[in-house]
Image 1 (cartoon, helix red, strand yellow):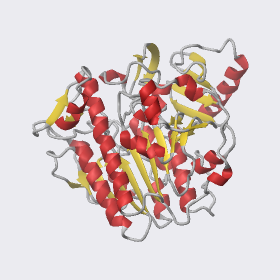
Image 2 (cartoon, helix red, strand yellow; image 1 turned 120 degrees about the horizontal axis):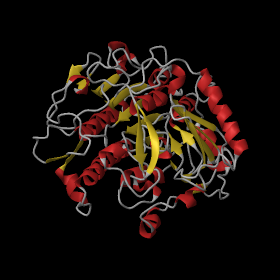
Image 3 (cartoon, rainbow, N blue to C red; image 1 turned 30 degrees about the vertical axis):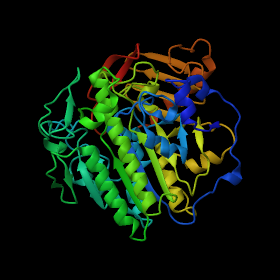
Length: 492
């Protein structure tokens, strides 16, 4: 494990693009065990901030100047920014299922995304027998709430207040409109891949709240701001209640459609492309929300013993035309290129994690649930069915953590172990082996040069694939796509 201080000013002054080689270099830097507290004295509050379709380079935390995110950076300064942070899948619903359950989604049959328009995937949702992070923390005395995007099934058995959450405000679908475009002071920017009308919220895209899914009349309010408002109110209420709380803050920003208040759009007059400009402005609005969450915790005296995890659900979607074009991890949603699953990933818990800086150890969204459980109940063994690791324990290990990371949605699979990654399309009958440290853009196939590495990873992948249950609902489509100048396969 390599730990580097996060020197934002120096990074921003010297480069507009993060040095991939500098991040990947295996320099020796060990965190002394004395600098790490195993756990805080009291159960920490836990806040997971999950944003939607945010590309790895589209935060300033990793040293890029184009997209300033001072509040995400603020989190990282009080914690750890993982440069090799991954999610469980490269598409929204599947990735969220992994985070919520701590299980690889394909292992529980949650193999493909939920298409919730027109009843295409009627009956699809997070399997009822699977416990969520909210279920598990609630059993340990926590209050629980979710604000924002759900996308884990729209039928009653999948509804958030039936899956361990005490409170819910948000929408059940995979996407919705942020605000009525006729609202004064709103910029709505069309893209080359717009699909649906932008003048109304329909079906599962409606905003609802409470256990009875009561409709909320708020089409004239910018949704990103309102999600923040609800979360800040919850933190204030529960901070006075004398028991720990868990908040799952699931922003749909900066997911399509592209809508943002004019004040944010005006911040980025230097960006000529209106599509890219609106996307970045939406990130700025979301980042302001992160700042308000931190401010509220500080105001009530609970920042230090609150674990905050910030990450994206997957990478940026190439088809809309707003991803960065100068970085190998800038795009790849729906694919198993690095840009599909490697995301911004920050963890901050001042009372419980004393490490500070950039860490290159590979970690996963599957690690969030076991980390929260161990923090909440240090004396209890973690459930054996969980697929992740306790991040506090990971940060105490001297040296790089060797782990096998597996992803897959038939017909495309990937596995990473150490510096090597194997990508396989059963559809195309093609397999590629990459050295991610030497070749972060995944352009040189090393299969012929490293046959023993390829064979070992093929066995890992094959054994896992053979153990998977049948998907609970069918594949929608595969597609040949070009991402950052290279051909790959998109699975939906």
